[in-house]
Image (cartoon, rainbow, N blue to C red; front, side, top):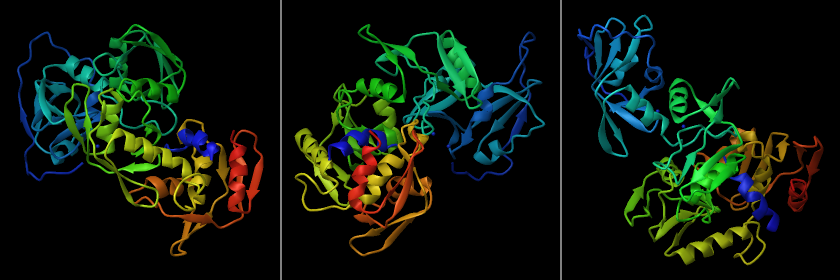
Length: 405
């Protein structure tokens, strides 16, 4: 069904914490500061971190224990565990970290010597999520983490929908240290070859960033669902990828894969690579050609074409147009819940009470990838026109989706 292939890029969309026990490890010591040092405000990154057992996570890196925080009077408090960090008192104002700090990122340790280095590192963290509401989290895009760089000025918007104009990279770093911001479209990026492109929406920023990979975006890797799918297949983590310099690295989860894809660091998969299909079966591609063949089979999900046998995917096909504005306003219609489906193998009933339930069917901890037919009738309302439509059979799904064109 060509319509399914057309709608699929719109459909598949759907950003820290253990504790170590240690008693009485918070210590205070007086630190002699130069006489002219005067704190005028606190480092906002202090409140944006959370413990992970080894240190405190801040964006894409972890500040390792022990580390110190400096109070207004110049005294320093040392933190050696999550329990220590959780005892931060609202009555004590910590103005900055005590440098140097030891941080780890991608399993490599490095030293941060001052607040400027800390802010630069934090602002350059490539987001591994946070676009579920249709906006893309802002970060510093440069040739250090992409094949593109940002053209200033740009505009940002925060969760309170306040828009700020950013004139330089320094202003962007400062803004991101203060608050969570998203890019405001359109904005321009300059490629390493000098070409300037304009990004008009979230689709286009993903396309641009992924294009930096040797894949050139042609692998059908599903950014819309946090890089957990390729075509109609669920990635089986861990798997190996080839970097542009030929190095083979292991990708342990979708966040690591997201980071590599958005920084343009993936040249190819290291074959063989295995996936899970929509029926829950493991499939393996031993080469790029075999992967292309598997992806071509995705066009036969609805039982048509050259696929083997009929595979009832009512629950998937209806979900395609129902994926919410979490997709960036790309949802076609709203479903009148509850709805239900019957599995063709054991006749068990799958009941869905909300869009959140529906998303969990495909992208929860245990994806429900069986073969289902719908229990009709079902009623949907098109989001653009407000028109309601009731479908009474599986055959009417195609008519429903035609209204999404």
